[in-house]
Image (cartoon, rainbow over all chains, first blue to last red; front, side):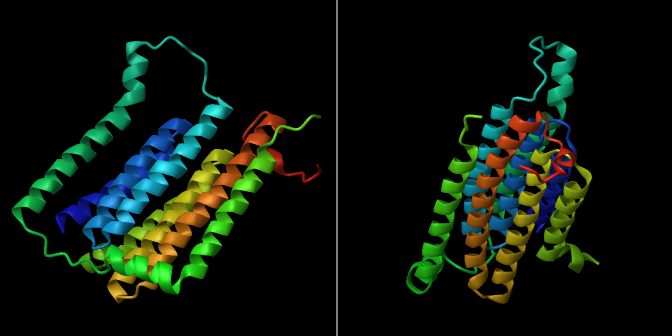
Length: 163
Length: 101
């Protein structure tokens, strides 16, 4: 229960920091930390598959897409000189936050080892995939069509036109 | 009192409101999309945790759908952002108020 509370507080804090930070890259890093805390929360409250998918798809694919676009736009100020003061100023927030998250992860593992989990897993991966691929195959096909349409749309819009 | 904080809907609503606030307060297009993602994330979280509580597997399927929809929407949206930045030389959403072209 303590793990649930702490991960709740962490995710709220990280998302608030993400949406109020000035630089886009910092916002993305804070949002990654928030997603990590949220997936701990999900895995702890009985849906480990959702937590893992949150990390893989949200943090692994969607956030990376954001990072690519930020790099493409390249709107960061082009100051190459990094002084010690600016380094500390830039990195103190994410550093403390990720250090806190890391110590929380270690703490959560110790808690799990000490108290064997009485949390029930509501649905196993087996059940979910059975429903998904036997009863809901049309649903999966629709999602794949949607993703293909998005891919073609993004390609068409992003294509550089001769003006 | 603590029942409210232990409910997963509390966390979902807090995250959703954070995203809504970000959507209204920020003017950069990139942050608008980030806020939309956060709002989608909150609804996905609510679906998963409620499907666990109510013992109904459809919530898990909705979670997968929301992930796919978020990815598709973001894919097109980011392409639009890149085109927009090329044309307007800024990411300010307020400079997109005339629809010509």
